[in-house]
Length: 165
Image 1 (spheres, one colour):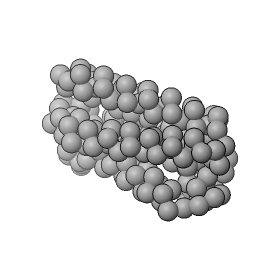
Image 2 (tube, rainbow, N blue to C red):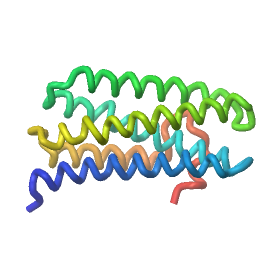
Image 3 (cartoon, helix red, strand yellow):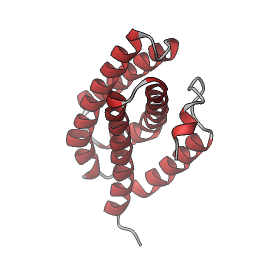
Image 4 (tube, helix red, strand yellow):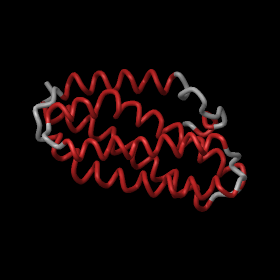
């Protein structure tokens, strides 16, 4: 039988893997050109939307209930709001638009900051809490599978699916 800590690390490992994947896409974007940049950006946006959905609807509520860190949780939610605003604006632009690259770069910086706070502050506190990690992992993995199998959230460019794999 897996220990409570094993389930905690399962959810936390999944979050950290998502973080690494997205950070890698932002780094890849910097050295890419043309169509490749567009595809990398579309993939990063899709990954961020799926990740944010999981955190906002399942993970953050579970963590908020168990740790006494309203300021930390509220800040994380506000950072997510800014990510959504930037994604919405990016979706209105063509990837060739000069504003696109600037917005995508700002999105990358915001995400990098958010990941650092989440991994350095929120997740260690959550890991020590009394969250039912087994139930959380089951719920998160089921929802993630559904989101990934759907392809991507509404409004995400289809070209992103070509980069999956």
